[in-house]
Amino acid sequence: MITKEIAGATFAQLGFGDSDVLGAKTEAVFLIRAEIAKRGITQRSYADLVGLKQSNLSAFLNGDLDRFSVATVNQALKPTGKLIRTQYAICDEYAVAAE
Image (cartoon, rainbow, N blue to C red; front, top):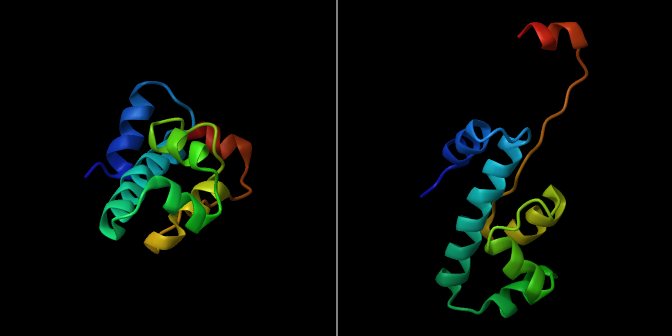
């Protein structure tokens, strides 16, 4: 399985600034696909279960990652028991630039 670390590193190498989030969303695609298969249901049924439009779920599962917020992806992940957790901190901008 592609992990968020592998996907994130790939997005970083390609120059995407939000590579960590894109990596996590990529892993979410695989988790959701596995959950759909495990339950033996359609995308439409899964979309109904999580309260999304089937067309939006399909777009996400087919790689349209930027269009969906972390909150929406977490909504789709709920049946898997997983979520994307983001952490933000206030720090001195000069300390960050020096890293």
